[in-house]
Image 1 (cartoon, rainbow, N blue to C red):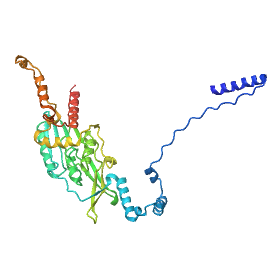
Image 2 (cartoon, one colour):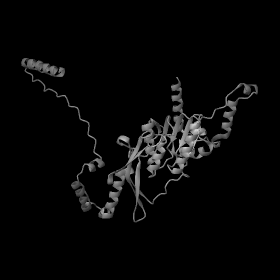
Image 3 (tube, one colour):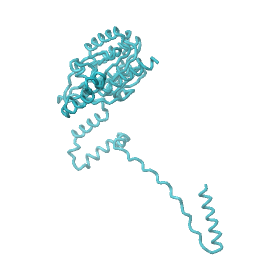
Image 4 (tube, helix red, strand yellow):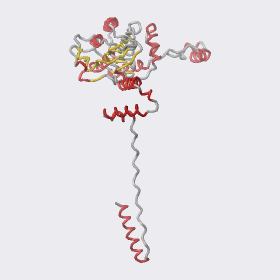
Length: 366
């Protein structure tokens, strides 16, 4: 408004002067309009998604008639392109395998349990099999006798299977009687199989669940159930997003097309596929370190991988003996040099879980 009044005032002033001096007033200078930001170029994927069936068919026909290399667009190549596109678009819902892989076993993914800090129970479920379920039942009985008041359930070593019934048995050990666990839905045949807890839980109390990208299939359903009904905190990384039942369809050439035919859905329709379960507290850990920790902890326990080794300090006895333990430790490390003893890997996910349990216990005591 001020600019408009100023412009009008200037024009009136020039008209007045020009009437006196005979000069022609200069033309008003227009204020340049702001240049709009260029719109983002649409992606190839978005352009294809916007095409109707007639446009898609026309585009393929034009390619076959005009492309410089007709052999690249014969029926076999078009079928390959179509299958590659389907695999890419469906993601975790379908996989092409060179052969049918063997099912995970207890030997490759064993169950492991331990008591930490005299009151924290640790359960690494491993493969979700009947044998590991029996091992977990025995551990939970031992925990009850030791007055365990916090539980860490580690699902980072639980690979995918199609056995959601056994997974439901694992979840029942922690879920109140009558509560829905999850439902296995098969949309193609309009079939649903609900799983409910029909027993009293073997443990009720503070619970933390550890997950990562290797937590797959029924393990994801267990993690979601414990978070829902036990208010368990999930620490680690997002799960694989494969809480589905797969069907392995053999192809004539020996390969296998693995297709998701059913998905596990939490109560109230909460999906796990394909996004997976996101952690409440994200913590990174290299997969190689995790595998090393799991393998070595079977003999050494989890302590060396979650507790810091206490450094030797100067004390009265060392002072009287004329020794300096801190200096001796530093000199020993220098003598070992870069080829010295390798430090064990750490498990930051488990460390964060123990820190959280300790912090909550201190808070509750105040």
